[in-house]
Structures are given as C-alpha cells and as structure tokens.
Amino acid sequence: SVWPLRVATLGAALAAASLVLTGHSRTHSAHGLFPLLLGLHLLVVAFWFGALWPLVQVLRGETAAIAAAVVARFSSLATRLVPLILVAGIGMAWLLVPDRSVFERPYGLLLLAKLAGFTLLMPLAAFNKWRLTPALAAHAPVALPTLRRVVVAEFVLICAVLTVTANLTAFYSPDG
Image (cartoon, rainbow, N blue to C red):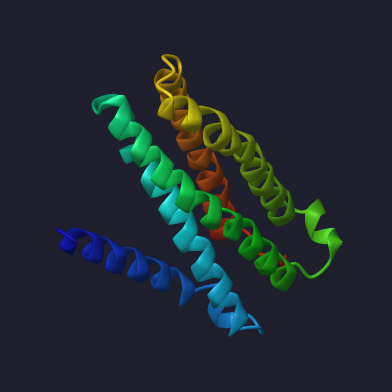
C-alpha cells in the first residue's frame, strides 16, 4: 500500500518544516532563500540516512536478486539526490559565514568537520554505486557481505556527521 509512504513523507516534511521555521531561517536576512536551502538539505539527508538501515536489513534478509534490485533503485535515487546536500550546504554556508575568520572559531571548525565527514562519505557511496552494486547484480559472492559492511560504515559516519551538526547548531553561531 502507498498509504505508509504518504504518512512517512508527510512526517519528514513536517519535521523539516519545524527546523526550517526556527533559528537561522527566521532571523537571516536572506530569509527567502535560506529556508529553501535548509529544507532541501534536511530532506535529502533524511532520505539518505533514513534509507541506510532498511537497506542493511534488505541485504541481511533478502535473496541476492531482491537485494540487487533494491540497492539499484536506492543507488539511482541517491546518485541524483545526495549531491544536493553539498549544493544546499554550500549555499547555506555562503549566506551564513560572514568572512573567513569564522573558520578560526568553533562554528567554523565544526562546519569544516561536517564537510570532512561528508567528503569521507563520498568514496564509500561511489564504491557502492560503481563497484558493489554491479557486483551484487552479477551475483559475485563477495558483493553482499562487503556491501553490507560498507553501508553500515556509511550509517556510522553519517551518525558522526549528525553529531557534529547537532553541536554546531545547538551551541555555536557563525556570528560569534
């Protein structure tokens, strides 16, 4: 049924909207553009992060053929959506960061740590997309356990990036 998907989509949109309607979004001078960038950023991160654990479950419990089809579908969507995280993040940083001196303060250092975490995720995602997904579709015996481990590593790394982000947004401001 499509009903649970609609409820989940509505829930994700409401959660993103709650974050978009508070904090920097409400006070920033580019109040029209910033919420759009933040909303895009949040929704794509939610898609990526939210899909990883169910993906691990599919890789653990389904046949290689079903797992290959699910991974191929996820990979196709992620390839188009995940770059938007970087695009929106750069746009928000452009709007928020007053000058380069911010990178000498905790806010800027945490922002750089967040970017470094995202940068570390890209080779894992590329390895999944270009090596492991085709290997899984070709029924290579090593593909399934390797893909399972790499997806878990992605999950853990995204958790680290989210932890950095929580500290960044809860305790620091680009202005001070």
